[in-house]
Image: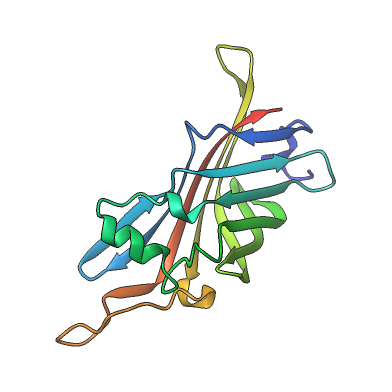
Length: 179
């Protein structure tokens, strides 16, 4: 880990503390931005090799919605097709610093479609909690075109335009514990 942002992270396997972490997204829907997240996800950061490796999975059926019909629609083939594709997956290919910012490139798979993604964010140096556990934080955002992953649903609006934007912002906040 040659960069200043990464050099203070000990070689270890870091596992997600899902109680204090979040995985979600934001997308423009007609007149505002819709934000939601997932209840079930996992992530591991391995810093024992030449370059850190971040791997994460999300259960699409665990998306938080306030409406049963909307939840069912998101599970359909028009969106996540969760009956066929039971997870969303990310695996890093590069873990770098750009000044004080963290830049993580990797492969994102949604609905069986794998595309390169680059996320930017921060890495919090290690600290010890009140129980003697060493922890770090990783916060990342990435913009992706949902249609590149087969999430094609949209609706025409009566006076022109579409109901749903194609660009989605992925928002990940990981609270990781040294294993």
